[in-house]
Image (cartoon, rainbow, N blue to C red; front, top):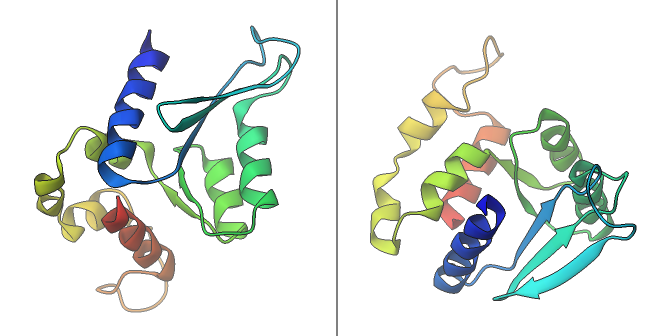
Length: 145
């Protein structure tokens, strides 16, 4: 039921924003023998095959198609893989905040809130008042949402 609610929210969001969206669900413990792909309301929905987790499918998608993906995840391994592949990871919590908002309220999400709460790295070199390259890339990606 939670998966269906997420898919419905993504369909509404995709229609509102015009983004191409792919969502990957784990099927490694209870899935079928083969990967299943379907398009529902313009959203590509992938269920991994039994024995395969969603992380590996996401990594393959990001690596195989050379473009700048916005990868919504809170998994550190996928975050690192996304950066290495030239894509931008966006924390799931940040995206969920955008998922329920309407177009007019997107501007209410300030850069200070995002950068200080979620993207500040402890002890780094350089000017402490400037965002790092990664932080700037994430902020740019969040503005696209």
